[in-house]
Length: 208
Image (cartoon, rainbow, N blue to C red; front, top):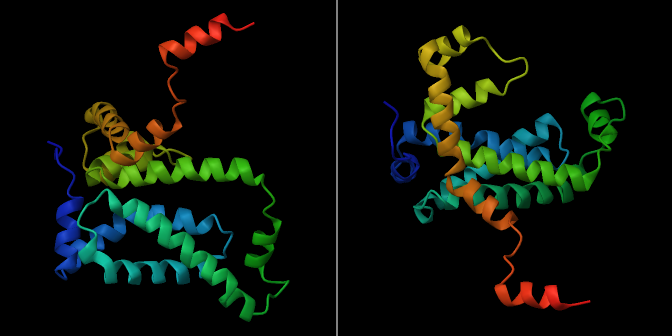
């Protein structure tokens, strides 16, 4: 039976008390979100690793003040952006770019539309933040189901321990829980257009 309460609060408290297993679980949950944010700055693979390491160190230093799990995704996104900008303004400026370096060629060739890319990245980060709040089996199941190509149900069952016949119902419960997660609910609420009051509708109807 899936756990009904997100364990993130307990993980944060345990990690703050120097519990290494709890710390590793936090990293496992939030690493996809962290990498997604840093990757948006078009850093190379090695640069992403450098910035990610810095962010994890910052998180260790501030765990005592992050007792609320709702604060972790926002904190990671904020610090990851700050450290990425700092890296771009210092380390990359000090390091000469090799035009034959395949990593730098890939970064330079990325000319996707920035507005669309930022919107898509924001939605992706919200989903990753929501996934981090799910129990491990639900989170792993959803991540496997969105892989391309998608693994077979037999492979998913072997990886997650979920019986093949239970994958569909577990997926439905996981998606519902994802929709009710704090990051997703906050994003949906912020994306809704402001409601029009009855007086506004009346004024609009009588204009013209």
